[in-house]
Length: 145
Image (tube, rainbow, N blue to C red; front, side, top):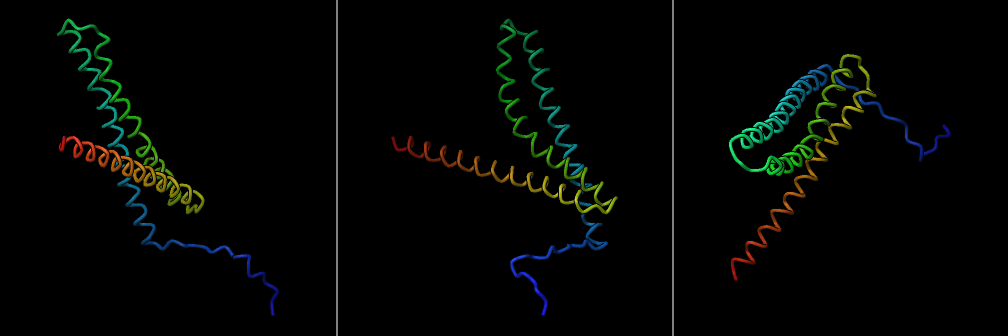
């Protein structure tokens, strides 16, 4: 009989089959596309208020600083939107390297970025649902006044 400690667990190795690597590589391509598309839309979101600021400033007699209030909501949305796009881009980049090199450590790091992406989106969804609930309760309370 062997002297094995039942409390020490042997590390288990998870191997990825050929079709699993193909699916992972296909997923990586789509996440790269979506992250680049997200970055492009973030650039457009930042560009539109800048153009509107100059167009409104030239066309109206309002002080130039009045248009800066349009930047605050846009910057808030961009700050919220940046992190899931960044996590998705990191997942895609690291997955490409991991599949090409058969490197399980890189794949583990890539999967941690994918987890962060969905964790961030889940927390954001919970926050938005909470805001919707509060707005719904206030609208319902003021409807009976």
